[in-house]
Image (cartoon, rainbow, N blue to C red; front, side, top):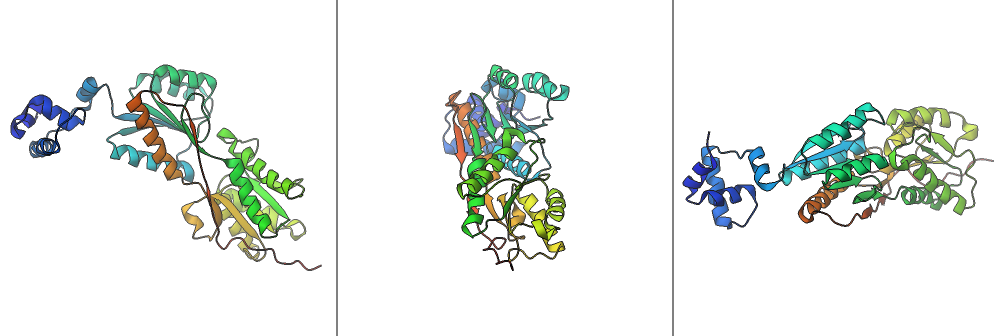
Length: 338
């Protein structure tokens, strides 16, 4: 097996210089680095990560905790995290974190505590006070996505403001008979996503002088969930609204499919708006509030690596804006016959 000494000999440099060139730690001229890399490639030298970590104190590995891997938002964030980390030469170890349970405790007490990570990224997980204390005691940089975590830099969107803007778009078109189809308050998502989007909807309706009584319908945060709720809600013409604010694009897709099955034209007879910026929104011609999950993942990696470089920074919350993208699923309401 080739050793660093062989690389140094072939490149015509000292062993310490070859080590600096391959690890990226310490100054080496660009010309020397190129010679060392070429020599390593020629003899098939691969640096030992364990040996490198003994020298640098770094494992080049980041732990990621996440509640779902099959849902669109979390999948987008996860993929962007992995890509951004690979570009920087980091591996990623993923933990699909369950709700409060012995299995969840084991992730914190054993895996995160005993396995070596340079830092940890928490995606969409509202950590308990005990879990936050535990992670702080590990002494590793931590970055959160989705909502505030005590003493930790975090990235989030304003769910209340985004929901209010979505509802205000429908109001600006002249709709007054508007309902919100969102997540169940019993099956609340971490960081109160369901209730915050309901709050934004209600705030816009009240500001417009409209009642919010009977204007909320619960659905799973999925396309089948939206479809099932859509059939029940739209099937009775006596209580059919002219517009729906859906708490996610996937719910909105299901609502549009249900409307089509019932012979209800979108947007002529029903306007639908969502939140997310799902890739299928263009196909459904869905008006939506885009929240850019990939940008959130990339920013989380940048913040984490900056924390590694400074060994501690300000625990600030970054609230990223959402963008209203208007497509063909919303329009002014058609006048109803008297």
